[in-house]
Length: 471
Image (tube, rainbow, N blue to C red; front, top):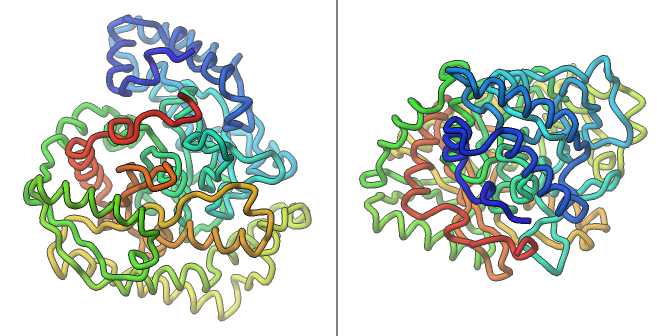
């Protein structure tokens, strides 16, 4: 069943298509074969559309026969079931389909993918309305984390099917969204790469909202290089990934200043995970990177405000109450119980929380400027993903949800950009993600640093091998 395609880099796949080494139809048929073999067991998708994918592949082959095909022409892509996609239903992880007149047209990022020539194969599962980092969906079932062959463990959320679709071999790019970590958490838990873009870098038009203060759109990929190819293909300022990749390839580890914050997030990191991360940082140090310790209390304060102020909760509740009030009664308790008690947007509590968030974000630059750091690093995950069966209890679910969000949500609150990349496996054999954080608006520089890190340490596949469930 395993073809050579999933083992190759996105760049080499693009080159192979252009050289007519294989056709877009063959590539998509390979994706369909991978899904046919593994889809029922991995359960990454809410909606799978082979007919549409094959039709798109035929069109891609016509474009590839021309002189200048678009950069992602023929590349299979999965889309989180939070994005509007023409011809596909949107459930947003909820119990029934959302109103088609509102959510059946291509979202902005989906439009950019189509312009880049990508083939959309289907829509991946999400936590209900993306409200949570665990990755469970009681309405439709939870995607299986393929790094444990014996026990069904959480894949991380809310983009819970995204990373699994990459490992399944049915997609080479997986669209997700990140409000408190919903791209980076599943990336860390499933051993892939997840880039949380700067707030406002790309429009969220056509994506079911959770929090207009924190929502961002982006993607998960197998490698950092793949992430750069995606970014350069869809970002309107580039439109061609090769110049971006060529410029970022010049980023060097030697002389890179990496800030490691003294904070509760690192203190709460599971010991075996901390050991893996420490080993990775030591390798970067041996390659010439300079580690500097910084005061990380701002990150702890940001986490606390994100988890307690209720900004996202208030905005999510207001969206449902105003646009789809009947959905409030349909929410599963894992979401509904946590949404209860949301404060009104017009109230003083919400306004004060938002003002405090903005003041805190204004100080985020101090994390870098005080020591002239290029990036700040945190864990991508502080716990081993627990078995799905452990989370039937709502109190346990809430505990794990807080643990998944702890290392990632400060980035959203402080309006920074970040990327998680796999650097090893913990004592249970599950992936460990290193989270690299940069100033707001420095997404390209962040990708350059991450590429240098990946080329120094090796890709996730280099360091971890294949997931046991797929071996």
